[in-house]
Length: 354
Image (cartoon, one colour):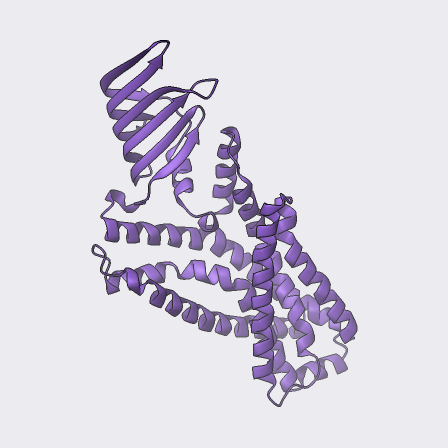
């Protein structure tokens, strides 16, 4: 790699880091203010809110990464252009293609960083933040969730009122269906613990519907034959945008095996796979802004344009995802279409800039 390429990449990444710190700080402050109304519930006070907000910062950084990359590239190359360094480079033989290649190299590094955040930091931070918040507000043992959960496992429909931990739940209803989808058995379970590869139920009140009669019985302890594992249960609790790539794959496989609609999670998986390429497309789109001298009022103008482009792309991305689900588009198309359009538009603008 030549010295000029290294200089371009370092400049872009430096301005991107500065932009990222500023945007994440603003995003975190807005999130903090939005959550203030929830303080005072249980033991969730101001200090707990500060800690919760800090744990959600990686998730905010991941959401903002495309616009951070766009603004960082615009500001970085714009700063070089305002000092005529871009013009000097082009006069010395640096082509527009080489400038774009250096920008894409920086984009690849940022894309890899986005993958790391999206698969490790953001899911871990979001899961810890939600668990901490639920434990503080609702005194949920283990802090997993305070909301009831409905899910399907083979022929069983499971209603969990209190998920205490990934391997422990309480106040559970299990409805077993017959082949004709009629209810074959209902179990009311006081508590359930997962150990030694299976679920052990305690305090079971079971009602079986047989031909012409109903049989009710109480069972102190029994084993439940289910494919539901603590790992899958944890994935069900998390929001789709808080799951890692491998977590989404496991959850999609589980839902398919149980005849459930995994369309939303397929779309989330494809959006996560497309995310690093979106970062690169955003940075490539910013390159033409660096051409020519942009001294008077240039920085503010470039910043405004970058923010508008980022907001428009975010809206188009969300609308495309919703339309894809509404009209049953392939998840890969719904996730990749905005990025493909942005890439084509960036190539057209680069060609015209020659």
